[in-house]
Length: 191
Image 1 (cartoon, rainbow, N blue to C red):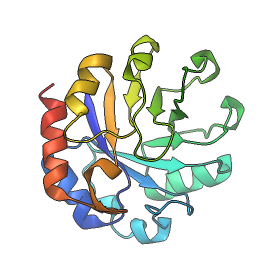
Image 2: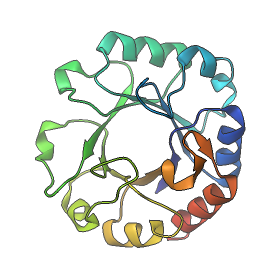
Image 3: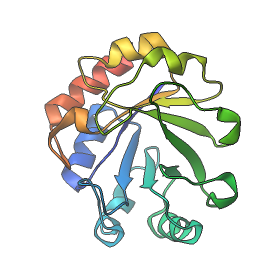
């Protein structure tokens, strides 16, 4: 299992997440998000992230060409797609995780061929019924309202491939609380 810290907006938070044991960092390239990061700004330092740490670009209904260009420019490992993208619109030459917001029932996953499915809560920072994730085939990344206090329980109930948090370890949107990140990663990896 791995831990992803999403919504990274600055080098200091990225380094703190890596130092705490995160194996993946998420960078949100959707300007509507309070955790948005401009590709040019992050481009000045993202190349210094160790090669063993996955760099995940988060996109919402972006064109295939834009995702591919940003992915190539920043040497991203994964494109995490959060919109209405269909497989024919998936970017090429980059791994794809398809994110789905879970409300009452899990959608049919046969329609989302991707390396992994990221299950997110119904809204930013909201959890969902984790028992729904246990029946999802393939690699599942569990997200949505995970915090240092609940991540262990979520892992025990779902046995995911990985876990992802953003607002659950923040002091304010786009700014990580380094102590919370350490607690979250420790709790997740000890589960």
